[in-house]
Every structure is written in C-alpha cells, then in structure tokens.
Length: 401
Image (cartoon, rainbow, N blue to C red; front, side, top):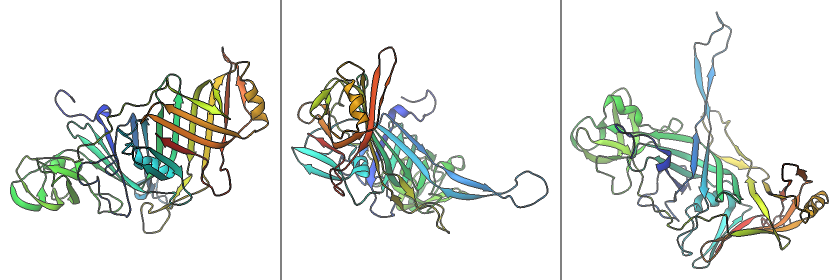
C-alpha cells in the first residue's frame, strides 16, 4: 500500500535491475522478464543514486557583485547499493547480485550444480552496465535509469549481531528519471502521443545523450514485455515520441516500466554460522570487512561532451580487517602485526550445500595494530591483500557452494 490518496515513492518496495552494457546503447531493462543471469533483478537493503551536474556562473567583470547568468557544466553521478548475502535458489544458477559482482571482480567460473567462483581479473577492469531502480513496485510510481554505470568499490562486511552485507559503490554517466504521466488524446496506432501538460515533465530523454529516455507502459500496453522507449519529449507542445506505435485512449496512464522481477527464493545468509581461519587457526572475531577499491577515474574532460564516455582503473586497493576481544590468547596478533607477518586468510559465511560462501585471501599482510582499551579491550587488525605472485590476480576470490 502507498499513500491514502496518492502513490508515494517507497524505499521498502524498491527493486534494482542491472544489465551488462556492451555498447553505448541505452536499453533498459532487459527485454522480457529478468533472470539471475540476464535481467539481473535484485533485492536491496538500501540504495542511493546521486546525479551531479556542475553549474558554472558567468564571472567576467561587470556592474554589481551578483550572478545573472550561468552555463551547464560537466555531469558525473554516483550510486550505491547495499545487499544482503543471498545465494542463488539452486547451485544451477548464479546469485541475483551476479552483474554487480562481475562489475567488481571481472571474472567468474560457473560449474552448474557445484559452485560459482568470482575471481579478480587483469583485464576488463571497468565493465559498464545499465542500472534501473524502480521505487514502489506495486504502483510503479517512479524509476531512475543510469547509463554507463560501473562498480568502483566493493565491501563485504559481517559481525556477530547483523546479517552479512555486500556494498557496491560506483559512478554513472547519464541519468533518466521517470514518473507517472497521462495521455491527453485518443488515437489509433501512433508513435507521437499528446500528454497532459501538468504531467509532461515526468517523462524525459537523457540530457547528456539527448537520445536515451524513459521506458514506459502506456495504459495496459507493455509492448510485448519490452516497454515503450521515449525518444523525444516536446515540452512546448506537450507530446512525446516513442519507438513503437501504440493505440492510446485519453486518460491512459503512462507509468515507469520494468519487467516482473525474478528474484532468488533462497534465504539470506546469517551471522551465527561460519567463521574466520587465519593460517588455519579459527579466530573468535567480532567483525570483519573485506574492501576493494578499483580507483576508477572517469575520463570526463573531452571538449564538446557533457559527461564521460569511458573510465580507467588505477592500481587497486584490496584490504582486509578484523576485530576481536583482546583476550590473553589473542594478544599475539599484536606482535604478528608488528612483524607484518604474511597470513593465509579464509572467511566462511553460511553452511550447507547452496548456502556456503568462502572468501579466500591467500596473502594478507597486516599493518601494525593496537589495542582499544574500551570496557572490554579490542584488537583491530587491518592490512593489504596481495597476489601470491606478480600478475596472478589471486589476492581475493569468493566461492559459492
């Protein structure tokens, strides 16, 4: 249910879709119902989309100190998605978060019925995809679509009180927001549609490309499950152009379109099963975090363009951290961190077939750590994850079995 009188944008009903983008074509979302391997629908704990476009005031010498004119500057957006660790419903499929995991790791090996392995790659370090966030699924109140999105940072976090989560942070090159509008005519099959003037601004074409726009359902028509792609919005004459002809009736609702999500039915992984082994010794950890940062740089300075069309990855920062109580048998971790001893780390989340995630970090070198003298002393040890050999790309991997 939404508001008593009007539909509201509800975070609790949002769903996120990811789709690999192999070209600049902005087709959102995947035609037909999404699946764990293609459409990429995901449950999210929370998400955030932040478009940002610079506005540059004119500041040449003039009478008076106040601005009276400005120009549109460069666009670059950021996004974040927090997900519970939800396995695939069976080992015969990949998890719902597959496209985001691939966006960070870059490689995977799928062995149907046995396992899915996500591993680092020395190539394809920036894998663009499109993202669609549909808020209030039951009433399709609002959607946001992102072009040329990329994962910059990945964090896997767990502790003894909360469910493990994955957090993905990234960038995107173009934003399209879509709300609810209304048809203002009756007509046979046509691609140009009059829209009620008070609702026209709920539909748009991307301000960067000028080509890729809202994807909508018109009345009961979904264009065979693909939605209608808005290719032009005329705000002066209050009409839109769509990519496929459609018969309309005055008063038809024009709403954001997304296919019915196909989501894993598996329960999420909890925090009461699993553990951390460091050099094959079980550690009584209170919390852990695994963080990877691609250090992406958007190439956003080309004359004649308003946003980036590519990004490059610098040296990646891969870090691991754990916190435990400063027990007498654990203070040895302080000395080991002072010596910067290299350690072999394995984190296990969950248990049982189809519900076990194993995070391998074969070469972790800790920084010098210290005790925090709270009521109960705590030791937090953090450090960098390293390849076993130069160029190996094996500092971090996740195996789902």
